[in-house]
Image (cartoon, rainbow, N blue to C red; front, side, top):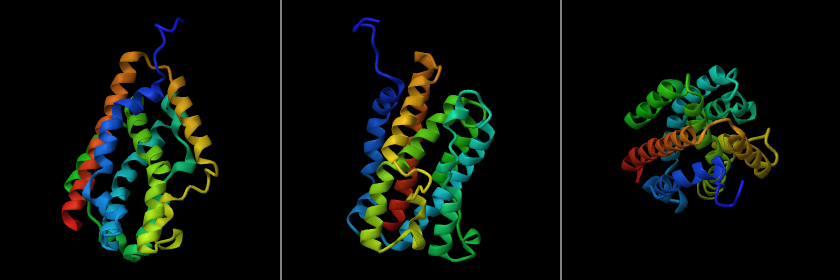
Length: 217
């Protein structure tokens, strides 16, 4: 292959296609309030509650896609977030938290999209899986530090969602994940389709942040 034939790997492509959507998510009012120490604990609790609904959908899809010859390699049990979210909601909202949380309209739209594309389309599953879990391992760790600083939360009082005990070396894990993206047997057209689905996943997440921001900021 000559230098003129070379094209970036899929991991680089998906990062490039989603970069603008990623920045918009980071600039939402609720993330700004969190960064500035102005988000009340009730706002964070509401955010975690919405996470529970879409992770429930995504992790159900993971159980289905685990047997898929392409998508299955992306399913890592150490990424599973539902038990941590349940622990955090118990700490933040009490033992009856399941009866006290409801999904917002933006969360319902996001869950609907997960159900639409993540249970049968390997690329759709990976698009949403990449968007959420690599985000948790990257920017999520910054949010963890900010929540600890501003709200005094710890792993025991509401931050276990951001803790990955099965992943001791996050950079190594992320590098391996990106290599899986590059190694997946998708042609250029399918790669683009998956990257666009990941961009949509960012936009759906942003809509949830905006909905929460209207309530708490």
